[in-house]
Image (cartoon, rainbow, N blue to C red):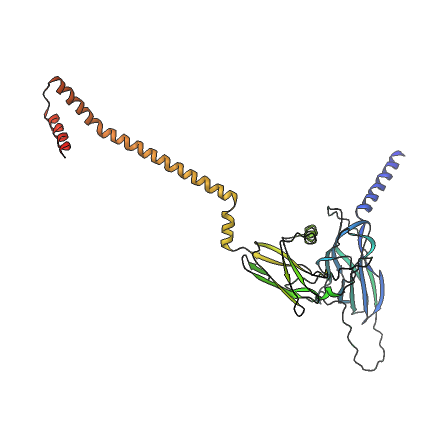
Length: 396
């Protein structure tokens, strides 16, 4: 009996731990819908995290393009305030809407945090659904703890189109809430309009949708100046450069914290003329940079990336100035100096040896002549010749 009780308690602890650590999920509302061909339906994606504050959400909304076509995607009122990948209208053959963004401190806690709203056109009769894949929801705990749980899906039942007799008239076309067909070389707009927020975190300004960076080079050489430009309906604009790298979800969170806390490498101020701004950057070290613009009302664009490529000369200078290269050069110079010193020593010793060998017989003859002269012994012809040569040298 005790074993059974222990097992039940153990299972309960595991279930409780699982619910505590995996307490966040996505839901598409409404959970079910009935419509007909030719109609328009709207689905809102919410994040549910009642037990844990979160700061990063990402994933893909999956739909069947045989039955549904995306007309527009809206991020108005989203709890996400900084988009790494802003949801946009996909290509006609695509069946996913990918999204990834950051919720600012203190994060989001609640059961209905709006992420985005998607408007679909209904194409074909039948039954289809909306679901999620690659979900990732991270806790705002400083560790990036994954608290993702299984997300729910939405079932959609589509009936035949209702044919009605209508007089021929031109019906004004309804403009999608947000058309996010952007310059492929520039990241889509972040949609962070306004500095004031409602109690549920919704932005109250509409300027953000018109504030974007539109002119940006893909890459520049180190040492070259380059310009970034864009459009803004409001006043003065500041453009920030932050050095970054290949970033994942957690790194992107850190990147945004650097942006908001003044961790930028360079900031340039620009005035808005005819709703257009332009700034120039120069002398940025080699690397990958994230750029974003912010106006005087607090509106912020999305980040866009520029690669600053080092020139060969700069690479050579950077290589030469590394500490280990300097140490290697010093070691080589010291080794060469020691080698030349040793060679000089060897050459001096060898020269001295040859000199001694060449003078040794002459010293012997000289000593013998001195001894014979002291004793009064007659010198040989060779000895007389040696003395004559010495006298000749002295005369010269």
